[in-house]
Image 1 (tube, rainbow, N blue to C red):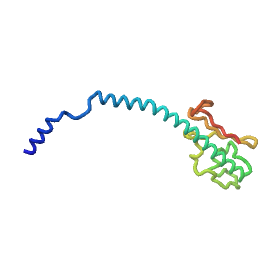
Image 2 (image 1 turned 135 degrees about the horizontal axis):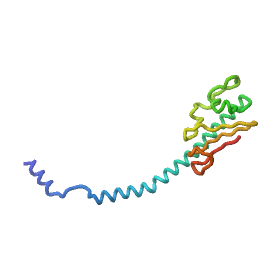
Image 3 (image 1 turned 135 degrees about the vertical axis):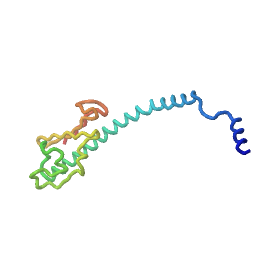
Image 4 (image 1 turned 180 degrees about the vertical axis):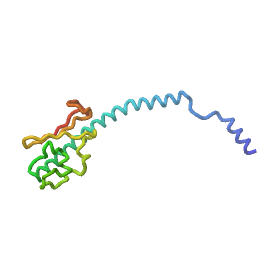
Length: 146
């Protein structure tokens, strides 16, 4: 008897659920919100990577200065920035590593920083997201000269 009364109660109720129109309205609302939020989020990601690249370049530049303080010179272009992590051959005054890992020698896009040294100055450059000279926003080049 209990079983038959439960079936009867269910048959008196209208069918529960959502209509196709209600589902389409929800999908349209989600699409509109995504169309506004996603482009802004992507733009912020590019700006954050540019800021991170500048901070990382400053960290590498500080390590180059420490190297110079210990060794009386900047790393040569032949030695490169790897001299901040591994002792160059024949350099007894090296007290590094000046950076913890080789990963710190890469920009936020995973490419090595470009290091140049001449006449007692040096520069550290990243070409930005597009990996080409020039650009704006996240594609802009970042260069630190000391």
